[in-house]
Length: 301
Image 1 (cartoon, rainbow, N blue to C red):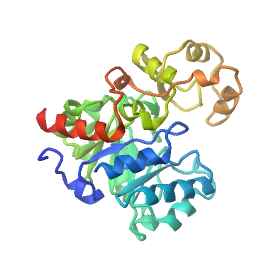
Image 2: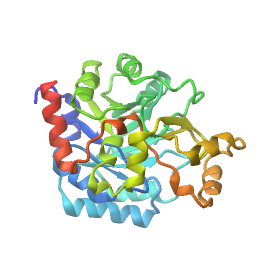
Image 3: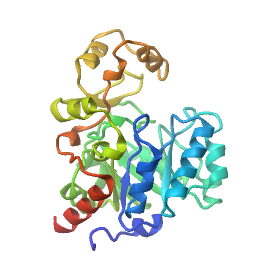
Image 4: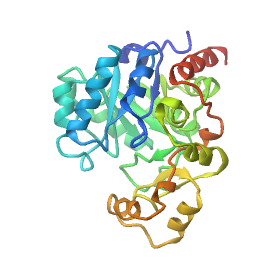
């Protein structure tokens, strides 16, 4: 496991510096527990959970494994009231966040590592200056919502192959590569670019433990993906379904989260399928088998 034996793995306390990206509204906490128990870093998709549900999710993962795991939240002002208090009280091993900056110092004082999402070099530099332990470089290929918090969303669509080496050169903390990675060859390529770890979301969406509906997976397998604010008011990459086409062709979106609240009331709102181009290459494997397969493929790449 020479390729995957990076300083980041030691920092996170995991065997493999492979992060299972959080997938809100579709991923149960048991997926995070299973990934962590297999040697990677599972993530609780906590951003949309009320505080009591977030606390329950953290405890369910702790009951299932003593391996390190992460909780993922939106940064202020998008954090739900009470969520950060739960994190500080429950003290998960790591907190990852997106849409901005969560102050790392109070978390570090409790032994909680912080992973902040950057879509540009400028964002990575701001996160590093703020004191995060790890920068997650989110390339243009990444599925789901964009983490952009400085400048325009359009300027922040930087391909992963360009973003990772630029961020590595700009910061002194470990960098995790996120976006379009579905197999060991992609992991090996990201490590060659200077990343110390990778984050995979769409690849884990296809595991049976994720409980994604078949039509969601089919859309990501057969349709192109597009980055648009039409669904939620924030730019996100999703399958280009007829439903999403109608939203794109409609009136300009309201700010986040007002746009999402309005769209969720539509009869076919469930036809919105977040994900990236990795869906065309994703394998429908159990989560533990996927982790083991990724490790073998990376070492053989």
